[in-house]
Length: 307
Ligand SMILES: [Zn+2]
Image 1: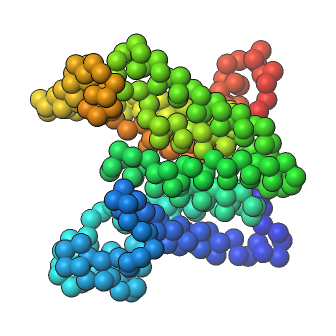
Image 2: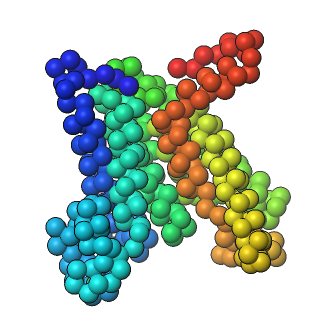
């Protein structure tokens, strides 16, 4: 990480705590996005209400994490239970912001990667809950990532950014969208199954804009490994329980023969969360992981050293 300037060093602990607190507040807003975007609702108005009694939630009952604990997960007005989703999103975002500060320190990269974390949290939870990846994140994400890499070209290493070349970023975008587009075509043509969603393409393009072409490949590889591991585990879980839900839906997909039926009927395990998680792993540790991997291949292969 970029160390703090000498006169600010005593504030290190304070910045750690503030990063976490800021993360929970941003996480609270992420929860609103996850809740409202799939329904096409505004994320600004109206204020949050209890879904059961429709009572507006007062600011003091809306403090991230704290309120949920103090209210013991119940609405103050009608005792309706408050789900685990909001506090989970708040806690995860808080921890990710803390980790980002710990990793990137006192540098312009820290707020950039905090925002990337928040975006990936929204994408993960919305894809798990609604099977959609919000364009609200991925579409602006691509040009923002590209612009930041351009800024990185001017200010260089001092920014602490992973990608300090606009060409690297551009290649990441093209590679991300291109690979998933090709995979999609191959799956549809050969396996007659729905391939990748457009949302996944836009997501990997966005991660490519932020993480460069190596980041795109690293994210795709890690995402596929995590995805197949979870996918196989889920399959075994259902087999064990005697419910072949996943298998059934796969059979249905096989039976579909027209393109239209494929898109309407076919449901796949969402790939977005794995890409989002893998993207963040790369953001935190990517180049170190690649160097470690190259080093593990043996002394003869240490020709390439990646920053
Ligand atoms: Zn209520």
